[in-house]
Image 1 (cartoon, each protein chain N blue to C red):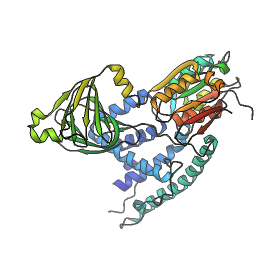
Image 2 (spheres, rainbow over the protein chains, first blue to last red):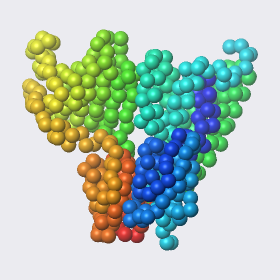
Image 3 (cartoon, rainbow over the protein chains, first blue to last red):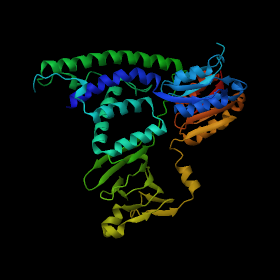
Image 4 (cartoon, rainbow over the protein chains, first blue to last red):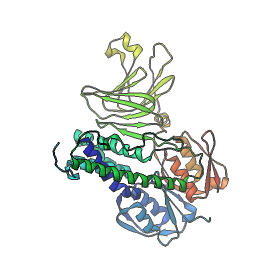
Length: 103
Length: 348
């Protein structure tokens, strides 16, 4: 029985590996508004860690997002059109949102 | 063994649910999901047994995939397809084909995942000298209790029908004990015996002393020296909430020194336990200071402009590496790790 469970677990885990890379789907309901406020609402709803620069986000407004989706998709929808980018730390699933740096 | 074929539908509903939970845990749970998992685990011993078995199997896959390999690890001679995928015993041909297929898929996935992992590390590792600061782990026990393990802590668990025994062989752990009046929860630390029914307490095992702080409920404490000279009932001293006992392991009698401590002192002693660093519009210096209070590795801000940058954060205090990587990737910070583990932050 152990071998059956292991093999089954192996296959099912593999099937979900790609889902793990992008995160589980979460029900989001974030209103449009000041980025420094809305992005923290996003973090609470997604259950993720977040780092922001207040100075950069001053005056920036994000879009509303609602519905079931994974965290990166929700964040992308929120910051669309603002020029902001985000990075996700692959090891810990933490996010940072900022403007692109000059190379 | 017959010639019947196998498919995933042969898993029981409980095993299906256990597999689903293990994969969700790997992706990360919100607080509500964590509560939901705890409720399912506590609903039946069968749930916990299936979860523990699948969890162990997943961790074996993770080990093979090298997810927990740190920068200093040497080559792992055990990083091979394990015996369970080899035809050690005679099995029906259909069953063996399924196992062979699963092994083949696993090998492909391992190759892909190893490649991806290397790429991600190149993206975020600015310096090859970075120290990987381990996160604080929580281990769930079969009785519904949980143990937070500080970095380097080691425990051994031996539950029986009459007693729940845990040995702390190294480091520091915080025990959150599920109530079970029929089976006392006993922690053994270098000859010190702690007994609880349903409570929370912290135990720190250093070379020369055992330090116990009770954060909830009551714990009895006895030492080998006391037990040999008195009856079992009279040997135990009781520690209540906000009480601390220190046992000097160098002394002959090992009598616990017990005192009541202020809540502020208790919180200071338990800073190692992860908490959310939740700040809004504060200087980065304040956020760094909070990380430094709670971690063995300290950050030093070298450039004043970094110190004054206004930031907001929602970050677990033990996620030091993640915090530094994101500072580097998004906020023009460069981190240099000193030989003593100090992390120096410069403007990039």
